[in-house]
Length: 142
Image (cartoon, rainbow, N blue to C red; front, side, top):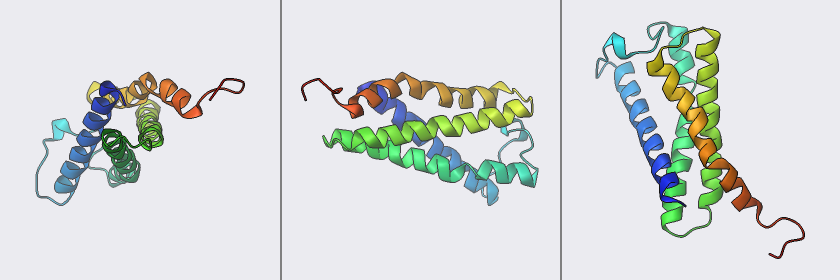
């Protein structure tokens, strides 16, 4: 695994784990987050439910991404499929959020741009990773 992929996965995944930890602390009233830092409709139960619907997806890409980094450090070739899963789920999560905010025509840069980044940055690594996993094409020596 390249250093840039490991760093990108680790940063994204740790930030998402921190986000969900903070969301849980906020939801349970342990911490108060200023309204200006929240997303539109953060006090609407349906929007809160929509936000929490991302939790399993975000947790899945974070855990598989960190597992990929760990496997790579151990020299375990399982890092490739784990990274592919993580990157794919990252794109999906970002695209779902971008679509939601675009449908509502809410383009607050503080929420829209980070989600757009989640859609874009994995494509820096996905083509090479898919080629690596595909192995030599038919007719080439293995």
